[in-house]
Image 1 (tube, rainbow, N blue to C red):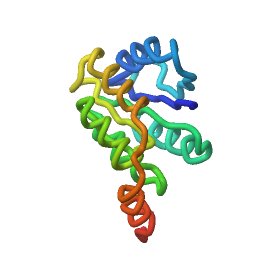
Image 2 (cartoon, rainbow, N blue to C red):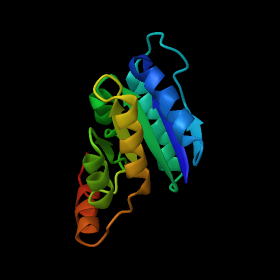
Image 3 (cartoon, helix red, strand yellow):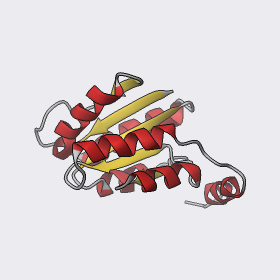
Length: 144
């Protein structure tokens, strides 16, 4: 599974630490940013969301200060189910019940250790399907 990852300036350090940990076992494509210089998070949410929509066998990870802005921006794209997760339980449920395909994390709200644990749980948790797929299908019918 290919993982597209990006952050804004507020979570650049946390993204770098997460990449160091994940690259041991996963194929990651870093879509930016490349420093702590001021950038605008919607640009990175768009980049990751478009890649995930183009490559159906991929997932995305987005980090910003709180994770909120990235999740709002990513969820503007039909077919993206971005989940802001602040715990491993959030990550597990977002995959099992919502088949989230983009994980959003807060660099200012979670420690590096928590970010790694949340991400590993998210990446290793399968979608349950069944009644949960019905709910995703219902959301996919929403008119925008």
